[in-house]
Figure 1 (cartoon, helix red, strand yellow):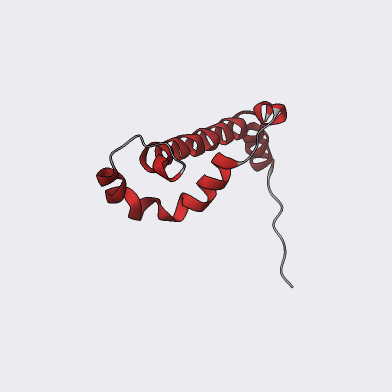
Figure 2: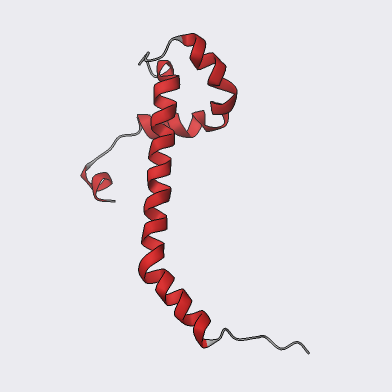
Length: 88
């Protein structure tokens, strides 16, 4: 028979403090990182959408690093947006 160890008082306090302070900051950091990655792909691979920003030589040099993210990036860039997207 195995006994399950219950979290202690200090463990619960740490979880509550993280939820109050750290969780919102970490979500914001992840959202910012995602936006920066999409902006980078737009600058380098914008000609896929008809927006040539960089010469094709540099885009082709970066292509192996960007290939895994192209499908989700194109879907995000081309989807319709409304007022509720700005609120999230």
